[in-house]
Length: 247
Image (cartoon, rainbow, N blue to C red; front, top):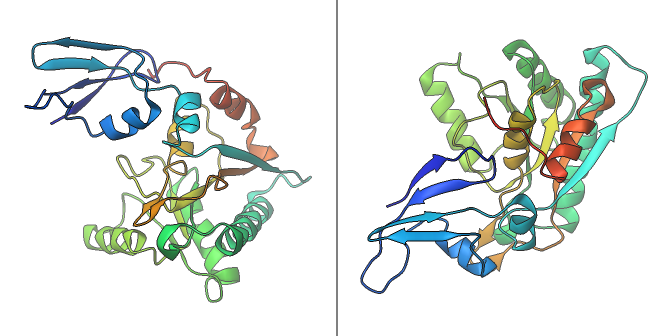
């Protein structure tokens, strides 16, 4: 059994791992790390080991996570009622292109996740999507903490079953949530923290591994936003792994 514990550096995690009879490390990340054929450092004393996770560039090169592609919509609009539809239309177009030209394993459809400033905006974004494309392209849902537990459970089931095309979240980022069919991350608010930025982008970087193997190398994690939200600096820091430590 492995227990993740953050270390001071953002891209490092320590794992307490047990050594079984044939000497394999019982870590959920071990198979992926083995495919990289490289550990940054391993320290074992008895039945406890310390394993450093690879950097983002190492993980992308080893196909643990997807490479990213930056898409910034530019316009003179300053009001969100005009900015939101512009971002969503780009999300829809890229999603359709991916479903047509870059299939996921087992014919799983591509999904998108969007982050907004508050619940009101999340509901507005989902509403815009459903009004314009919900019938023909697939629906959007606003997933947030103020929904009844029963509703949240039903929404999560719809996400896990790939029945929605867009999941809109607020601040909690669906902590611990991991759904590899999400391959598009739409930033629809200003994210001030580089660490939070990286956490959100990570939701779109998981690789789908189907019955016949992993997804195509050509599938990228698209990061879509509007220049109004001033996220280019965060993305540059993310790409060059210049992230600050979490508070």
